[in-house]
Image (cartoon, rainbow, N blue to C red; front, top):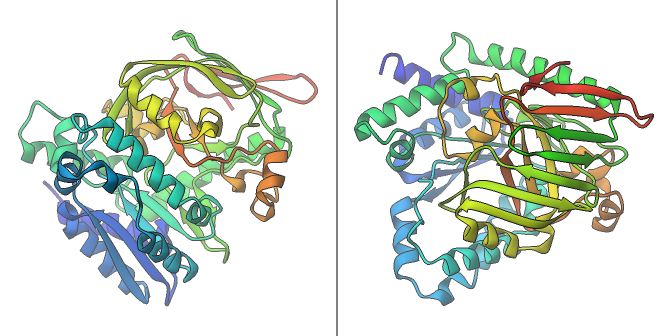
Length: 411
């Protein structure tokens, strides 16, 4: 691939410099598939060059994960090791910056025992509940990125060879993360600035409700809590360091009022949930909660997701993404939420970001709940944007302002 080595170095530099924005003497924790150890080593090298005190690697492997689900007894999935929770907490409390390289085969576990998968997901969510605050509250800098693995690449490009599929996926990732330009960091500065303008407009208007409609049948009214804040690409950790949590990212997001979402909602892209695909979902909301739902593909996995926590049936995130964006324009279905959610307006079931409420990071759980902020063991994004999606903002005085028309910003 032309310029591959140079683009790989630029990508790693972008993630370390702009993504986590590593500071001198700061630990860096990298979670990565072992198949992409080359990229992890490049990230580590760049982190040390920028002054990191230590780089810690957490490895994963699709083949070993599948072997475990195929062979380990159920009781293995019914517990989560305390040492793993303690290890994460240890580095969170040391102020580590976190890089998560997400690249799982989207159909890895399609033939695995769904009871094992559901049990493992729920047990892990419960065990790590307290640790979620370090990223959900932006206490630590964190960045999620993806790089090709063979299994993932072949799902995205099934009709070409493995080598060609991996190369084609690399090209798509470099394009959608703006790495294939001369100066990616400058390009990202401009991109973030443009997204900030949308967030500033939405915060200035302080809409009380959003009304979603499209031809698939979506007709949904989402109420926003008093004091909600729209955020864009840049986040700020507890020490005031600016970082970018997702690369790529095209979203401007906030939180909904937990008990004030009503109407019908249809998904527009597949969701990769725990190594299985859920597609063509539809939901009926009443007073914030999903009261009816279905999916033409993988409904049992949707059942399992909602079984993790009753509050998972409430929304925790509202994200606006233009249909006309680099990821959407690539015409690639990535089967990877990091990419697909940034090609489409989306919501998330489950836990809300306290950072999206004025003073939210200083509130107790009880105070957050009283302000309409959902708390849950899960946070799962799913896509609802389409080429004909319209979103109307409604102010406290009843004024209606069109925000999206034909899937794109009109402000």
